[in-house]
Length: 635
Image (tube, rainbow, N blue to C red; front, side):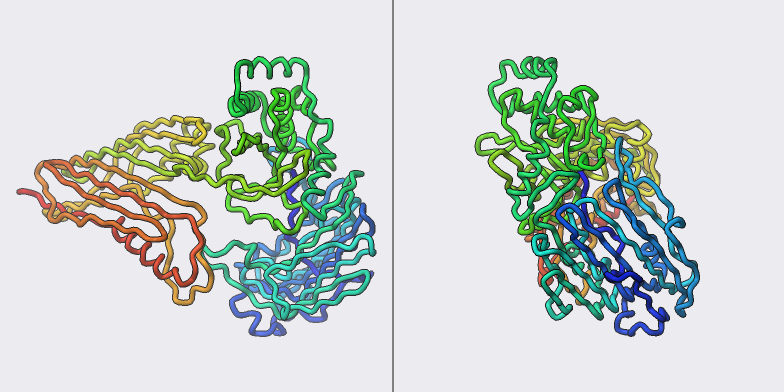
């Protein structure tokens, strides 16, 4: 499904025949207060979205931005998206030096035209016109002007007066124009009333901004959605590729989706017989859903389909049946059809997918989704099926679609529900046996279990299905020891409701311990380090977000040379607070040492007042993790 977010091509818009023209882009004219802490200055930006009818619109954009240094260079790359229903009416750009002198101009034909298709796309009409407007000398200013004509009305690009941190704005203006029966809705986010002037008449609404200062997103701070000023707009009545609808409520928007899907749940007679065969003797919804989900995974693969209404309307289930592939819409629709044939009722469900994606605006019905899954009512519970993955465990959503609002489409209407938060065990458990020689060299035999969300760590859930070379690289990149060599390794994947990956490997390690005279120094915490650093700052201004819980359990058994003994034994440590838990134990016997470590970091949002305590917890854990034990030789 297409994810219609605002184009990151922000511009100056004037509903006039000629574009805005600034007489002087000299950097010296920028107020010092706007340059402080900024990498980019928006000199002037205007956007004008004109609703012509419920089935057509136009968008005119012009922006002038000054890029002060190399940290802002990415904003010099400009791209305009279009497709079969979106026409680029005009497009031009100019570049000026720091004194405001024109360096070069680009017309429509100077922009590179390329496909915007992804690697998984089979059919897609999305294209972009793109140009890199950067120069080798800073500062410089770029202008971008373009106009688009839409043969539909379905979404309105979000307006951002500034759209990144370290960006200030001298002036920005946004206009919506419409007829009485096509007045759009809007939602203002992260903008105080004192920051703009609002002008409204019968057929237009305009917001004017001036002197917006840059902001800085602090480490592990709130998401961009809470920081960037934005005006989000959406039509009420709309038409896309001949299909009319209304999005004044989620129920009405869901009815439009139902209209698109109507009659597209046909299956071949052969598949109907297969469904009956697979579900014969199965009594429960969960049993039938599980076996049909496995059938789907074995039979189909994911490709993207983005042609006109095909960006929203799925293939007929019979086509997926025949060709064995489809996008998230087609595969989910196919799953719904399979379940229906087995007498199991299920729901086509829209969702905004992606790890750590900001949630949708639940009070503002509009097209905010980029993916489709299936929900299966199961008594007081619900089963959730990700239909694009051949590898996912049954009823497992993970970080891609778990713990977020989704729009469940049903014959009774549509409603927002939350997908489940993974409350099960999400941990990494390492068991190591370590042999250390008198020269400090050593060998390690490791048995590591990744459970729940942790099996997604650094894309491990994909790596386990790749070749041996990629798997070996993944192991090497996960180890922080200075010099080692992997001897052998293996992975085992358990596709349960709570996914589990077990990894075994052995390796030789140089300088596992360091030697100085009669002393022998060893860091017992070999593989686990504090995953997130929280440097203390008295000027912290924003809350701290810990996006995902972490649980690590390490048990390491060291075999040490007989002629050495510990000069001192570190004290055990135990910490527990609102942020998590940390436990370390040491035990010694003749020729043996066992190191046990458990670290828990709780998911949550913590206030500025709690930040100092979080930093203190972080510091204590890091200090303990880096403890070195000194041994003495007996001779």
